[in-house]
Structure formats: C-alpha cells, structure tokens
Image (cartoon, rainbow, N blue to C red; front, side):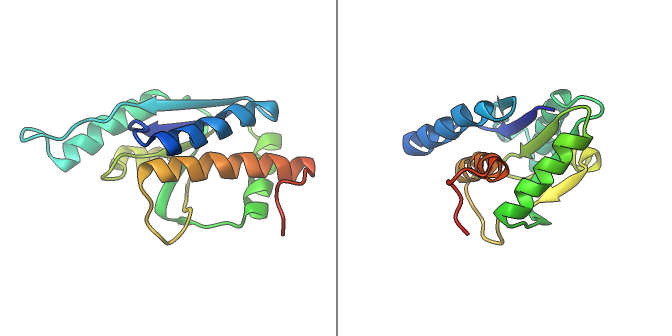
Length: 157
C-alpha cells in the first residue's frame, strides 16, 4: 500500500511550505508516500464557484485509481485522536490492495462527484484552517501515525 496526499493549490507561505516539505520527506522512511499538488482553478467572472469545484474535482478524480481508498479532509468529517488515526492507517495497510489517498480540496470544497467517490470524510478539527495549514497538519499526522506504529518516541500521550 502507498499513502498519497492530493491537494489543490500551492504553498505560498514559505515557513509552512518548509514545514510541509520536512514531513513529506520523512514519511517515505516508513511507507511509500506521494504528495500531489493540483494547480488552483482561478475563479473569474466567467467561472462560478460550482464550475470551479467541478473542474478541480475532475482533476482530483483523474489522479485516483479504481480500488484506492479515498479520504476527503472535510470540516464535517470524522475526527480521530492521533492513536486512532495510526490504528486506522495500520488497518488500511493490512487490508488494502491499492492506495490510501487523502484529498484536500480547493477554497470552495469538493464537487458532488468527488464526494460520491469518497470512501470516508475526515476532519482535522472543528476549527477552520487555511488550505496550507491543513496540508501541514495532515502530513504531520501521517508522520506521527508512522512513529506511533513503530513505537518511536515522537508521540507523547
């Protein structure tokens, strides 16, 4: 199994980008990992919110393979503790024949087609974060899960 993170947009804030890249570089020491950034679809006068979500959704869905387990990072999704998240990844690693794919959408969320393809919705918190912060938090939690599963001293209860 491979873990993938598909996210819409670029990391403009240098400190957040550096932190994100630090965790992205650490995860492959534990499990195959791929981070995919999809360019923003800029909304203009001719492109409404729904059209923007639709176009982003088409690009997201093109990166997902049949059999992948897709987790949308969504404010209305299931919240977990870090240990529960580690257990979730461990169970998927032993049961999936394809990839575990986390998806962070654009500024307006996901299209109906992406919601329909998702196997699960997961929330980081009831608070709202920027997309850049959500990316950092997601990769940090994936890394934390790996260290929990290996019994390494990164995580403290």
